[in-house]
Image (cartoon, rainbow over all chains, first blue to last red; front, side):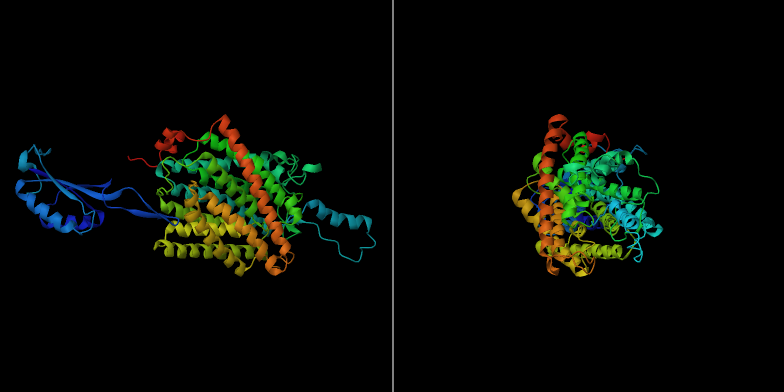
Length: 114
Length: 450
C-alpha cells in the first residue's frame, strides 16, 4: 500500500480528478492549501500591484494498492502539467497498515480503490 | 449651506407690520413660515438615508477592506459612534453647532441654550432653511438630520487607523473630536452666526465640515499612530470584497439623503442636487475604472467602489450649486487626483492610511470645496456663482474655508491624540495587533466553524 499525495494548481484540480477517475481511482481526499515556492501570485489594491507572499494550491491525498501506484502517478502527471513554474509535486510513501472501520478489513482489502 | 436665523425672518415680518404699518399697507407682508407636510415627509426619509450611510454603509465598506481578524472591530466602531454621537448631539452637540452664543465667541461656537434640546417644541418651525423660506420642516427634524452628519464624520476617520487601535482609546478620541472639532467647524460653516457662513463660504452638504475635517484628522491620526506592524509599504489583501461593494452601494444610495436632503425641502433644488450627486458619482466611478485599466491592465472592483466614493465626497459641497457639466468635471478631476494620491503619493511617502480616509475623503473634500469656487453656477441658485461664472472672489472664500479647516482640524486632532494617548492609550499592543482586534478588543470572531 502506498499513499500518494500531490500538490496541484487549483485551475488543474478538476482535470486531475477526471484523470484519476479514468484510472479507476475514485476515493480521495483534498483540501485547499497555501504555500510558498518560486511561483508568485499578485493582486491589485487601489492602483498598487503587490505580491501576496503565498500561492494557493490544492492538496490531494489517497492510499492505493501497490499495483495502482504507477497509473495514479501517470494520471496526475498528464492532467496537472502546464509547463510553467508552479505545477506542483507528487509524493509517494509507504503505508504500514490500513483498516476499514465498518468491516474491520485490513490491508489491501480495506481500500476502496481496487 | 445657506442658512438664516428665524429671528431675521420674524423681524422681516413683525417689524414692518408694527413700525411701518401704514407705509407697507400696499405691499403684502412676507408670510409666516410653517411646517410643510411634503418637505417634512421627504426630510424624514432623507434623515433615515443618511443614517444608512454609517451603519451599515460605511461599516461594510471599511469592514470588507480590512483583514478578517479585524472586521468586527470596524463594524463595532461604526455602530458605537452612531449611538455615542447621537447622545452627544442631543445633550449639547447640536446646541454648540447650531445654537447661538454671545460676545466674541459667537462666530466660533454656539452656546448651551439648546442643550438637551431644551426649549425646542415638537411643532416649532426649523430656524434653518435653504430655498424654502416659508414652507419649512420641524426644528426637531433639522436636529435629527444634522445628527446623522455628526455621526458619520468621526466614523470616516476610522479608515486611517484601522487594524491597530485600542477600542477604548478610539471611543474617547472620537467623542472628544466630535465635541472639540466637529461642533466648532459645523458652527463656522453652517450656523447663522458662523464666521465662514457670514463670509459666504459655500458648503452645500458638508465638504468642509464633514470630509475635509475628517480627512485631515485621518492624515494626522495615521502619522501619529504609526503604520501597522510589518506594513512594508504595501497593501494587505481585503478579506471580503463583496462587503465592500454592498457598503459602497449603500453609501451611494444614502448619499441622496445627504445631498438632496441638504436643501431641507422637496423642491427643484433637491432634485438638482440629486442629479449632480448621481452624475458626479457615476463619472468618478467610470473614470477610476479607466485609470485602473490603463495602469494595471485590469479594471478592479475595489477601484470602481473607491471611485464612486471619491465622486460622492467631491460633489458634496457643490451639489446645490453646480449643473450637470460641473458635476462631470468634478467627477473626472476627483477620480484622477485621488487615484494619484492613493496609488503614487501614499506609496512614495510610505504612510499607512489603511483604507485611504485621507486619500479619498480629505483630498476629495478639498477638491470639492475648491471646485465649487470655480463651478458654482447662477443657473442653480441665482445668488451663487464661482470663478467660471464671473465671481473670482468665491474661489478665495472657498480657499480660506478650506485652509482654516485643514489647520484647525490638523492641530486639534494632534492635541486630542496626545491627550488620549497619554491617559488611556491609543495604539494596540503588538500582541493584540497580531491576534486581531476582534478577539482582543471584543472577545468575538466574525466567522467560526460549527
